[in-house]
Each structure stands twice: as C-alpha cells, then as structure tokens.
Image (cartoon, rainbow, N blue to C red; front, side):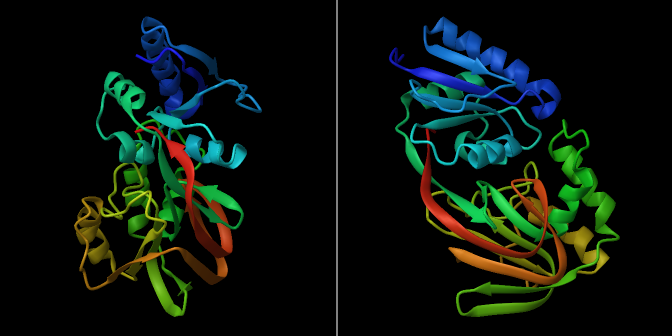
Length: 283
C-alpha cells in the first residue's frame, strides 16, 4: 500500500440525500487502516490542492460537473466514488466494484487521460443533450433524486405521453440535419440517466463524442423502444442515426430544454466540442 500519498477527499454532503457522507466515512476508515494520509472537505472545498497527490470525489455526475467547472483540469489524478443519485461516469470507470475493490484498483492503477467536453463555456464530462432528456432533467430539477435511476425513470414516464418534439438544426462539419427530433444526445461516456446505455460503444479517451439522433416518434414507438434504448440495443433502428464527432452545433428558433451531466440549461444554440485528454483519472 502506497505511503507517500496525500489525498484530498471532496464530499458533496447533498449528493444522494446524504449517501455521500456515509460513503466518505467508509472510505476514510479504510484509509486509516492502511495509514494513508488524507484530508476530508465537505461544505468548504479548498481553492487549491497544493501538497496533495490525488483528489477523490464523493458524489454523482452532478458533483463531477461542479468540480470540473470550478476546478478546471487539475494536474493531479482524480478518482470518483458513487455518492450521488446518478453515477454513470463513475460506473464507466469502475463498473460494479465494491468500495474496497475500488480503493485497491485506484492504488494499483496508472493514471489515464480522459476527455471532457465544453458547451457554451460550460464544461461537462459524461453527457450533453437536447430534447426529451433535457425535459426529463427539468422535471426532476430540485426534487429528491436519492433513488437515482428510479427518479429519472419516473420523470421519463411523466413526459413520455405529452412531450412534443421541436425543430432542430444540427451541424457536424459539412453535414447538416434539420427536422423534429425526440432526442439529440452527445455522449462522452456510455450511459446516462442512472443506467440508460445511450452510447454503448463510447470511449472516454478517443477524442470524439458518440452522437445519437432519434427522430420524432409517436407514443406507441416511444413506449415500445424506451426499454430497447435503455439496454443499448437500439443500433440500426431506422429512426436513429449514430455517428462520431469532435464538434457539433445544435440550434432551434426557441429555447431548448438541454442538460449537461444531468444539470438543466435552456439554450437556443449549443456549440459543443471535445477537450481530449484534459483530465487524469486512476481506474
């Protein structure tokens, strides 16, 4: 077990309705048992990380989004523990490992470069989107999301019968698509929404986003194919287009319901591009 480490543990006390606090307690107990140096930060995070070798973040995708927008691209390695309601990026790195297994993996791993994205000056790490998923995020905004995928799924069900697709113009280099779309998804990771595999082949280190465009669908098709999309089995369906892109623009005449890492935004235009290898994670 490495003895030279000094870890800044950043806890979001609101993540997971307090789950992150308990998780941080478990982590620190394991580190004490292994005589690893650490400092825990809860309500007040430090302005700099001088003297630390690593940063461990306890929270979900929203906590990661907050971190990269307030501490853009620190030079020391990161790790993330599943303390939020949505932990999709954490799952991309560690899968179903237990906390003990995660700590072992982190201590044994070599730091790896990971891509991020930027949209209208806001950084994101896991996903961005316009349309139905933005509306779903708007629905659950400010509500108790402690049940993760369950709260997302309930919001999906509350909108699936009433949501009306809007007109978008989507530009990728010299290619343009115009029309009504149910979902415009920009994925850095493979899954979002607490376990929906929107981009099951995505890589977090290829310098590209996995783009998924889903055409306007009637209610029957929405209900029929939602479970298919959840499992990541939608490749090749006639109403879905999927491709890779390093930069994409999404526009609409009206304000769009959009999300970045599950955080809600309202834009008329999204200018999105990749930021290859700007973060380093141990996984």
